[in-house]
Length: 319
Image 1 (cartoon, rainbow, N blue to C red):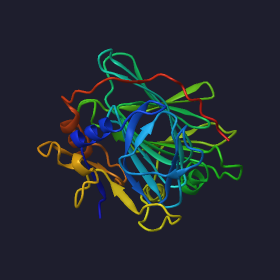
Image 2: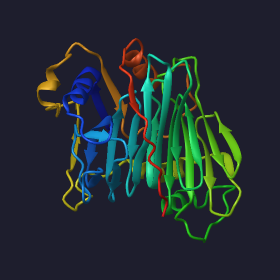
Image 3: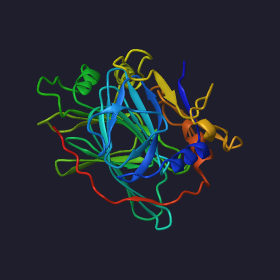
């Protein structure tokens, strides 16, 4: 069964505005939590369970367990999904439509992730994901990836990918999923991956890169259906499997039942709903307007957003 996260944008905007600012700048909100996911802010002495509708601040650490995931909606309408056994942090967030400025950076040091681009502005802008050995520049698209042992588990046996028996801690898999839809139907989107003073551009959905420590980049190559199924399982946790006291699943604006937004769930009932596939199938060759792109374009086009700036850089530490 296809799992979807239905989000009323106006309701989530209201939810974002409802939380008082405290400490680091607010950059988004948790839209869905499944199984065991924990967070730590500057004010927290230790990790604590992540909560749906909770604010996400600059520098917050997200840590997920086995068969667990978290999806957050950022203020520029980008969507970040953290899969199983992951560590992720938002390092920088500048979004100012009035000045045409976008500068967003996140770091992933372990586990699986998916990033759907938000609203890139006409002026200078950058959306980047840092990993231990490569930085992914995202241009209006959906990118997925993994860091660590998961990479070896996913790509072992793939044609053209040599066996790797070293320390997999800093191994990285990067997959171009396809257009995000937020830039218009005529814009394909791409990723620019920088590593060891070299840049590799990927602009064909379904193409992947692999970085093993001490080896040249492998790819771009087409990830097989079997390998993608192994990867998708990292972003497709089984309910109740996480254990450890985390919630089974919660979502803001779920398609059925309580929206999870309390009073905000009734705001903007006439607004369109954005169905964000939590676990999309392997990417087919993209049609002129695929389902996700059309849905996202219809929701985001014409939506005005206030500028948000979180200027302080948080330098990721890779262990």
